[in-house]
Length: 464
Ligand SMILES: [Zn+2]
Image 1: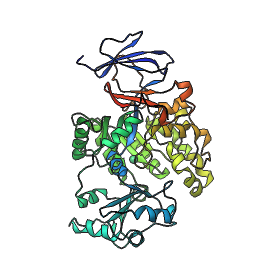
Image 2: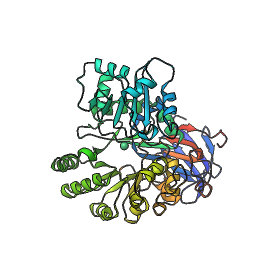
Image 3: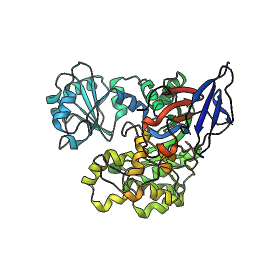
Image 4: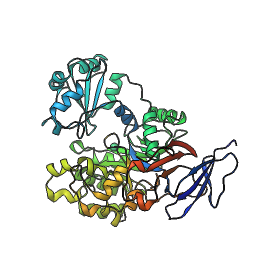
C-alpha cells in the first residue's frame, strides 16, 4: 500500500464513544465499525482515550534545544551555594552553559568573581531563570570580548553580567542554530503535535531554520511561528502573531506601541504581548484600547491580573495564554516574596473562564517545564512543590485543563476534536478518560501521530 494505512481499534473519543479510527495518508479517513484491511497496521487501543495531538501555545525552541545540553543551576535540582559550585565544577575544557539560576540559590546575585572561584578553568556562562540575564566568568568574558563585536550597553565587565542582549551574545559566539531533534522527540513522547514558537526576535533567519528542521523531520511538530513585523511568510510554516516583549523597568513609548499594534493588524496578523506584571498588563490593555484590538490578539502569561482589569479582556475580545505549572514550579517562592493580599491575582485560570476569555496553555519552555501534563495537573491541584495550595478558587477541572492544550492554534476559543477529514495529528492514551483524569501525567501517553505518521510509539512498552 503506497499510502500510510493505519487502523486504531477500540479507542475512546472525548464524546465517550469507543470506536475505530482509520488513517489514510495524513488524514483521519473513517470512524466507526471498521475491520482491518490487508496490509494495514493495527493498533489495539484497549479503550484508551484518543485525543487530537496536544498543542503547546508558547515555546522557545532554540533556547530549549540549548537547554537540553546545559547544566541546571536553579531549584529544584540546585538549591544552595554548595550545590551550584558542584554543578559548575564538571570536568571538561569547552564552554559550560548553566541555566535556571535564581538568586535564592546563593542568597544574592552571583557575579564574575563568584564564578571564577567556583569554575576557574573553563569558560562558563550562567543564565538567570528569567532568561533576561547572563553572568560570565573571566574566561568566558575574554572569549566573547575577543570576537571584536562592540560590547553592548547591557554588559557590565566588572560584574560579568549581560542584560537583555541575546542577539549580541549569539553574534559574539558565532553560533550556528542548534538541531531541534531532541526537542522534537521529547514533545512526541508527550503527545504534543503542534507548537507556537513565540520568541520576539524571530525573523527571516529563524524562519528558514525552523522550515529546514521541520522538513528534515528533526522537528516533526507543526509550527506556528510568531516573531517580528519583518518575519516573512515561509513555506512549511504558518506565520503567527507579532510578539511584543514588554519589560516593566523600561516600558516602550506608548505611541510607538500603538503604532506597532496597528502595523501588525495591517499585515493581517495578531499581536501577542508578554505581560508578567500588573503594570505591563495595564500598559498593554491601554495600548490595545487605543490601537483597537483584533480578534485573536493575545496576552502571554498574565501572571498578575488585578480583578478590576478582567472586564477589559472581555471588552477588547482578548485571548490569554497561561502557564499553570508556574504555580507548581515557582509558587513557593512567590508565596515567600509577595504579600498574601496579592496572591489572588497570581496565575488566574477560572476567573478568565468565567469572564469568557478564550484561554490556552503554553509551557514557556525552557523557562518552564515543557510537559503539558504537569501543567494540567497544576491547573487542577494549584499545588506548589512543597504542597501548599495557591489560589484554590482558580483551579480548573481536568476536562478544562486538558482543553488548554486542545485549543486551535489560531482561534484559542475553539477546541479541536478527532473527526473524519481532520489531520491525523493524534495522541493515544493508555487509559480511558475516567481513569486518566484522576492522575494526569506524561506516562499516560501511549503513542503520538503527526500527519498520520507514528512519531512516538510506546504501544509495546509497559505503563510507567
Ligand atoms: Zn516566553
